[in-house]
Image (tube, rainbow, N blue to C red; front, side, top):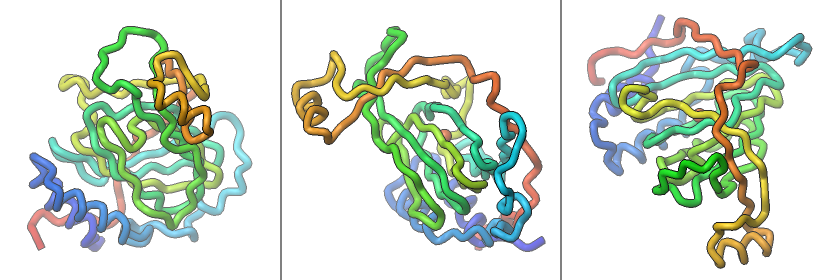
Length: 235
Ligand SMILES: [Fe+2]
């Protein structure tokens, strides 16, 4: 098995990424944008991507970890047609996402008041994206308080999605994953006057998000990464 120069590039920079510098952001972004399915051993010729969408029950989402360090993890997700990853957050994280194959609907929100440690069951969030993305498409980046930190995916066709997450989820460090259900609304109590005016003009939408347990019908299965390997020396 060969190695993937892009993956190696990531590994080197992510290992150095104790503090993400602007250069590193740009580098990761640039390399995500240049990454092809073939770099990770994927192609539309694989049986998974030729599925006709006929499934029984809830489709199982498969994921594999390409590499992980204390600063970053790099994961590939395989979503069969109609699979859903429900709304979930990425506390204090930056995530670079690249849809490598397929077509999916992405909905994302950011908290209106990211600093509030609200104990309310419903918390106001601003809709960031509610669109269909089809590969090849640009890399998207979400940040701790912007860019759509809380998002949901619905696969319209079989999809492969690359996520570079920094820092990784860690329950012990207070970065556990929470799930939400949303109640979309156009204007909400608590909006600023500017926000309400924007919403009334149709430029903004909001949602009230309620934290929920991980949905019982969410089937996610981890498998060993068998694609091109990273090398452990800088190139
Ligand atoms: Fe996510």
